[in-house]
Length: 461
Ligand code: NAD
Ligand code: UDX
Image (cartoon, rainbow, N blue to C red; front, side):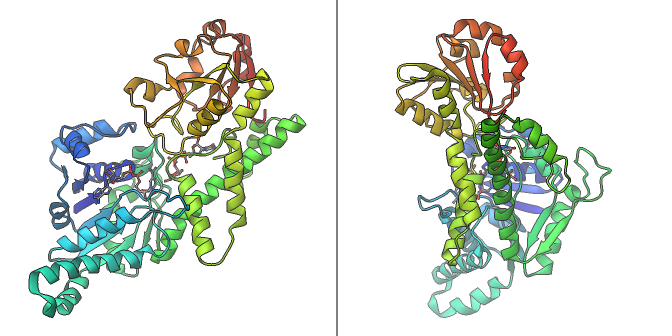
């Protein structure tokens, strides 16, 4: 099928590349010229395991194209994905201006033939109808230019009948985005038109049939066919549930710390109950990234708009804000006076295997440590390697873990990068003023770390 994906970030680029890999002809559109230049040269603008390789192979076989020209993309595609960002406004609401610009651009460039306009961006509930309206506005504006005010209504009616809007929320995780795209737990399709849903199912057939899945013999991927509002709500509810689950285990961890229980054992013990499930019960310094914080806040805000206070979700956010600074509390307990001391952060990104720093707990930790007068250094496999500083300030980025440890009074493990399991901790301990490590992700083996000469402090263990 002919596909256009507008917005080539973590979601759009992965979606475009994976759909091209399954045999569709995909044009990816982005208004960032630098990004498009890079992608045309066969390079991925983001770090995501497996993406570069897949991108290069599909690009070479001609099924993947990149452009800044939205008209070319819209006229090529029978399926048009909107995959631009919906970042948070200071109020917590979702900033939908990029979606609006794209919907208008689609309307202004629609050509003949039936099109499905797919909202893949995470958008406030009710955005399906709003996108339809903006596309119609875009069409009307073009018609005004083309035929003058007199002919507008009839022209809009004619073209309006030729597109439908589908909500198809995305559930991929950064760091495993390609894997998640080929191995989804479900595909959600929200529309009031069966023809649009059927085309979407046709588009996803290779994925539904697990042609590119790790285990192709599993039954087909479940498809949830529903109305647009419910599809939009599914996305928010899924993220809000997972974020609340993490805040829950973090709260339990804080109680464990006080009563002398081990949260990793507690998580195992409750996670084996199939009604609870063992995933997303990893206690630590809280959830971050470009989705959980903004999506939970947006849902709280939507509830407020409709005169409801989402108390459980507000509490989940509050627990998370406090949890982000739990490592600082623990540092204080260990070192007493922090002013003038040095701390080394192991990891900066909000999770491993990504270069994304959006709303990373590290940012709050650095700010607080600076406020308390500490010298902050960090080593992160991606940030240190790429030299990208992602707007970081108040932190010296070191090029290797041993330089990081040199002269530090404590280390804080912020991101559970795999390579942090096998560092030469004995050597690092010798380079430090005080060999203390706060394991903000309960990632390391306490016995091994203590054997290397460290005092080990976990979260709730
Ligand atoms: P991103 O910021 O990484 O990428 C957005 C891209 O859109 C950028 O490349 C930007 O240049 C481009 N863009 C902006 N305006 C444009 C325009 N008018 N025309 C063409 N391109 C334009 O965003 P992302 O992380 O991929 O997220 C996209 C959406 O998907 C958001 O709504 C997000 O909530 C949702 N989502 C993200 C994830 C994730 O893990 N990142 C997962 C699920 C859903
Ligand atoms: C999340 C959702 O999982 C995904 O379905 C959605 O599409 C986008 O948002 P992502 O933000 O990429 O994905 O990462 P995820 O693995 O969910 O982790 C989010 C945050 O929660 C990270 O900061 C991570 O460290 C934290 N986390 C996760 C925990 O603290 N404990 C856990 O048990 C799991």
